[in-house]
Image 1 (cartoon, rainbow, N blue to C red):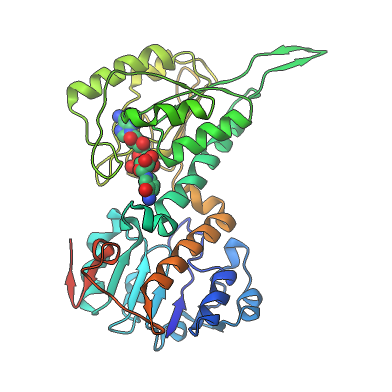
Image 2 (image 1 turned 90 degrees about the horizontal axis):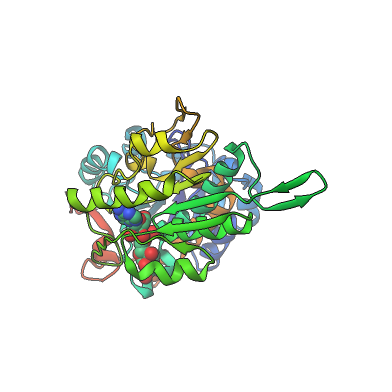
Length: 366
Ligand code: NAD
């Protein structure tokens, strides 16, 4: 089996789908691993590490793709690269909603089987293949560092000869994978942390990390451990409860998301206007529109009252070494699961492969 690893072409993307350690494991399992020159460079993995692991480095994407049975990327290949994919190959990649409608018909027309990594089902058996969780861990961690770096104050309480400093107050909105990591990271940096979520099940997790749970009086549990979309009335009640709390915060990390839908807008203009000068909002939901009405995705905005609203895009790509290492382990586990007698076998009736498969045998699958 020939596995090709491509260099990422998308803007801001610095991760690589397979790191040398995982490449070595695939080689030991009998696969030929061909890595496009420079594929791991931006993530801290030079070509020489892949060669040392037993992989072959190809000077171009077309050479890496020649005869490939499996193609690994973080973001979907660009249209020019799709035309180079060998018909019948299996592409394993993220397929973000923003690019899916354009890329999927092209991939299907090329008879590529596409396994979308966002769609790994959230079942215990598939936990080690769950790219959304591993990358959200990086997002939650980095969001706090971005916020800490943007604040004009320190995070922890300090008693010094030059006087005492009060600890920063941080609010984490949404306590999923990224939110819980943001709670843990801001606690480690010394902030007094509160958090809320519309899934009441997370209250205990929030408290066990040493944060207080803000009860907004709305529960919106959906299926598969996710939140469901909230009604206008529920959203208004959340905003009302939040308005009392947010005005005292120095740092807000917002991570609230609903799968397949735009992020709920929870922080209104009026709430931002009530915040103190120098306070910072890091809106991790910027990738899907943002939780704050004033967020501009990819930009850093300072309001008239001195509140800084940061809408970072693709935070995992800003910590590409560990993000790639975790992504790669997820992909390796998936490949090992799919391999039978040294070949990847696509069983559409399988509880993991079936939901992940978004294109097969010339058809786009929903
Ligand atoms: P996500 O990124 O879809 O959403 C982030 C958080 O936003 C969620 O906790 C959601 O409840 C919350 N949210 C949505 N609307 C909100 C609102 N109006 N106000 C406040 N919060 C709001 O979620 P995620 O982090 O990818 O995962 C959600 C959950 O899925 C996890 O906490 C976990 O329970 C479960 N999960 C299970 C597995 C597994 O079993 N393999 C793996 C990962 C996650």
